[in-house]
Amino acid sequence: MLDDMAEFLSSMGATEEFVRLSMSTPASQIELIPSDKMSEFVAVPFYEEWLSARCPVDYSSFTEEELRVRDRVYEINYEYYNEFQSWDHYTPEPRSVDVRLVEEFGLQGAIEAGAIKARADSAYRATEFCRFVAVHKTRQDWAESKSSAIAHPDETERSRSDEK
Picture (tube, rainbow, N blue to C red):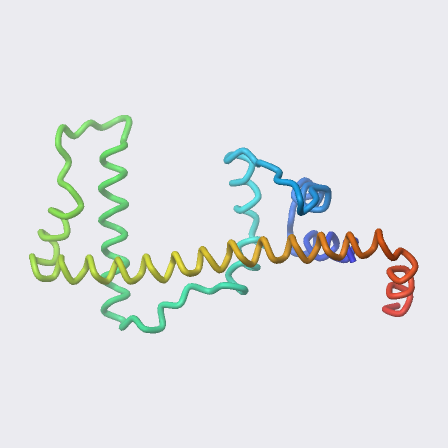
């Protein structure tokens, strides 16, 4: 079963290092991965595709206009943080995100935009929780299959020969 998992991960584009690490760490232990290393793993297309298939972000309750507003609010946030953190450009007092929202949407529109962003953030957080559970459930399943294979090697070999 673990060989099948490793083959599956490889076929989805996982790096050899990711497969090795996934298969070598028992579920009862935690392998702390430095953030720079983890970003290499999560940037692998298979991982994002797998998570998206398991836990899609549900924006179905949003109208087209709300999605447009949500996207614009995210753009404004992005612009602000880029301006604020820019190493080559110093702005003594960059306009806050709230001020930018009022300038773009008016006071009432900024309040509505903030509510839309809060709903979108909530949908995204629910998806992130689903992804967290999916990853840990998959690891637990792998660990149980590994334990089963160790405890009952004859049955594991028999099931492999039955699959062929």
